[in-house]
Length: 112
Length: 410
Image (tube, rainbow over all chains, first blue to last red; front, top):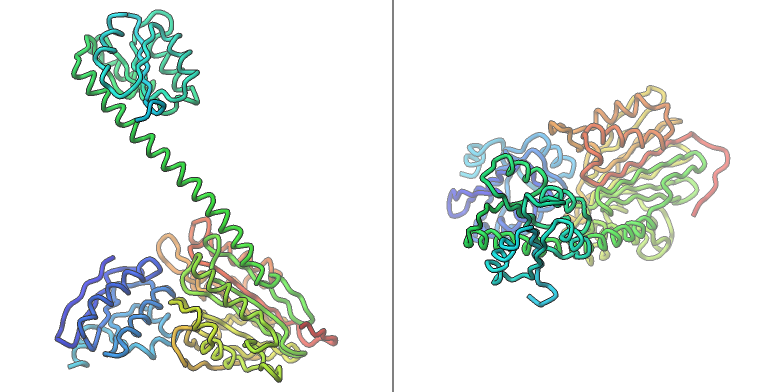
């Protein structure tokens, strides 16, 4: 599974999902990856979904687990969600739990 | 290797000197050697022995020659995996090609060079040994897989016992469900029941993921939903038996102990609908499930209904809303799990809600049952595969207007 991350500051971490599908086969390794890299005390995680063209219920479940994992220490924001993923976020009201941005620059400006 | 497991090597040559040479060279190979002076004798032996690993045969022999022997061996059910080495007198390329096409696996040139013979036979036997082991493992796997399939089929039958009949035709309401797990069992669930003289309730549920964990979850959930009139009846108030509002029902499921006790990462999407059979009024609560399609008989047109909502079992204390609309006589409602609109074509295009609407409009003359079959098959054809790779459930309800006699089904 292809995930990468980029540290912006001591508080902010960008995680990039380089997968077209965030589904049942991808969700468990993603959860594991997330818990490993975020364990280091970041208060804000920017999740770059611009490669993801399809997300299913398992993928969504993984994002919520990640959010629950973060709850004590901070928040997750989404960047670059494609139309399908946005549709799923609206249908399931997840747009109320994750702030969404169009691109990385927008996020970094908002955070700074 | 134990004595009984030692491999057998058959050698065939009409010249005694060659047989002797081979036996001498191969005396240290870990196999039992059997030498024959004619193809006929060797053939007789092979017919009676199932465990021959290798046949080394001369090409030119009086009577049955090497090629004919190979052909016969290839036709024998008990020598399917026998490794065949052909002895060739001359460096004849045609002979190699012909031997290969008849089914020889390797070649040894005469006059015999001792080290070469030993190396080739040793390597061939080693390969046979590895293949035997692979075959044994494969057989074990096949048996294990078969056992699991039988178990899953039995589990799927059990799972179906918590589902109502796929077709129900009660006064003023027709309802049909199509239920198609993508594996043997899946996490989809549907149900319907009368709540009182007026209200008919139906729901459809899609547990996240698919396969066995989702199915177990949905089975547990389905059993909870079937409990009527007691403390855990989510559809009716426990003591007064008053009908709960649709969003109260979904909220109480989301907050319930039963769900928390499952202690699982799984969650589900749901649509819960109450239809007033006298008036055609519909209240529903959409919890992350795809939108409803409302087919209007009079206009022969579809509307996509629903504003979305949180899935169930994902967020504690989530808030749920009631939404409403009005049905007219012979209107239809369609609920479907996301496996249907999200089915992908070979070029990765989703089927989508709009195409579903069009299908429903264009085929409104069909009975519900035939229409659902047609919808499902059309989407399967869209993917150009034999089945969809997610669980699919579709439920369709038609309201036939106010009837004169209502029967109260409890």
